[in-house]
Length: 259
Image (tube, rainbow, N blue to C red; front, side, top):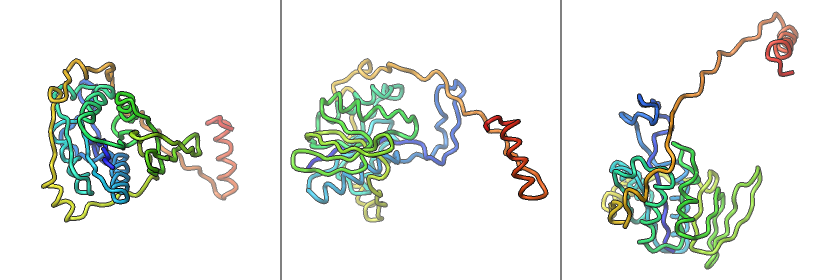
């Protein structure tokens, strides 16, 4: 089974984020970059399916040249090869533009299944995976917490309104991974060394038969801002536990007005 995994390079979730002067983006200087955590679930699931059924795992990423590090991280986990779609026009592309570039890259590859994270933790849009499926005209299952290949079909369990639902789709299909699908493995030292020698092909839009107009943004960020700071906490005073409970009840009723 030939599997494609979509990955994205995002800022480390523990990084201190700073907004740019024009408030339309974040400042990238000095940021540590990592593989999108949800994409790691997708990589792990692809590796498990390959181990069970044979085949290959190809990692596809759209982003600037530094994004090759995200591909190498997936290769170190055990993926076979990578494709980096890098073009200046993608630097301002929105989710749809990125999806168009990824779909074009996938069309040139052999695949039975496409896996991706259910969303990227930098923009939280959750749009690229479904858009790629639509552009490829293949079935799509979101928020999968269990994936089982059954012949020419795939059976998925997915999160739904606090519960779960079972969805069966015909292959080829695209599935987005949710937390709980698996526990991603750590790359071994041998895996890291092997990853340096695994092939990573770089393509621009022209090589994919696209132009800058094809990925031109249909939406734009008008402003970024941090949420307002929370007011400091308040310590309820009192001589005894009963006094503190009485004062807490008063504050909730008279001041906070939530009781």
